[in-house]
Length: 185
Image (cartoon, rainbow, N blue to C red; front, side, top):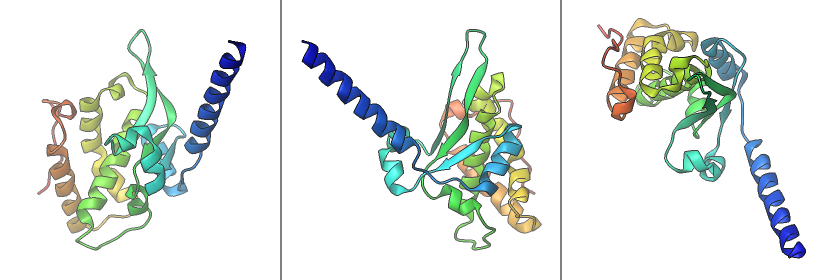
């Protein structure tokens, strides 16, 4: 019995070590972290996964594009950790201004995801809810695009149109009835 118990403890220790090691294998980019910290109003990190890391991450592998870990206390306050995890490819789209019209939809989605997860990282009571965080995201999308270097009015307009396109395709729990989407004219 004692040997069985030690074997279980050893397997558990190996599992925990493997998870801890996997959790440390990600890229971070100072520019992306800086924008996320600006949005979150505190120092945070964005953990950017590559294809292999995304495959190993249980949340991303289950279909999520990004996530923030945290908890809600007994008073309903949201306490996020100091990082968000983004699926492969999104961070790289945020690193430099790209005027390729064929990538504009993907760039808008990357900005939308970064802004949304940064909203969760704020730690406000409302930021535990997808619909309220998504509404906040839509109101801040243009500011983030500009901060990333998309200052040309025509390109900014196109990015906002794509953001609305992506927003309208989200599940219903991301939609707040009272949310006013940004103007695109």
